[in-house]
Image (cartoon, rainbow, N blue to C red):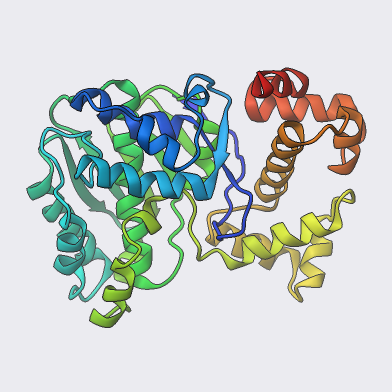
Length: 351
């Protein structure tokens, strides 16, 4: 199995400049090929250039991705994006939420979620397993999906985010996944997986297995009918986009790092500013599914992408403003993040 290095995982907020790899977009759009529909209209509405779909290193702004999610679902009249043998008719997600809302614990809610999805989906089966130390959410493919490989990859990505996001909302707290094994080779957009799913992701399994702490199954649900009504105004797009809005500490650390640039504030310094020990800061970020290094690298990558594509800053200046010792260090880091050097990335994006 291929091991995914720890990368950035940060929360979404409406004004953020977070970006998302184009692989999540092409996967979401794969159902259009199956239905024979054109993607031109929805892409134009959310201002995503069609040429970007053919550039594996391309990234788009997160708010555009969120808008695309809703428009694709509406255009296809399918909350499952035409990825599955049967469409998920509008209202399917609300049905699932109402089926689990009265559960006494998260464990029971996940069991009900698995049974509910069994009624809605013929292609993927969900199970919840537990032993004394850990629990696992298992998603297994039981029949061939009627889409291409990009669509198959997105189907697993989407379903895991759907279940994970719903679970976190039900208990009103972040739920860190200790590790995830995905049943396909490492995709081109895998660098984003650590900030979406877990810092520890593997590929090439026989089924998807998301492992988390056993005690989380005993958490009580903290939502009621009134909360559900408000939630459904934005869901499922609000929870199945790529970043959760409940990681306040990670966002605070990101903002502090950005304000300090070109200086790179070390973790102990940030901990003192937040009136906690470095160990406590590390632990709380880990509980939010993030890390100091992940937030730092993600901030630098997003700013580098923005400045390379939207400004005339020389590479040496970008390197200095992001706190790199020299242009060579910036080149190595950017190549690791995107698979291509910064100069080549700028030329390609400006095409």
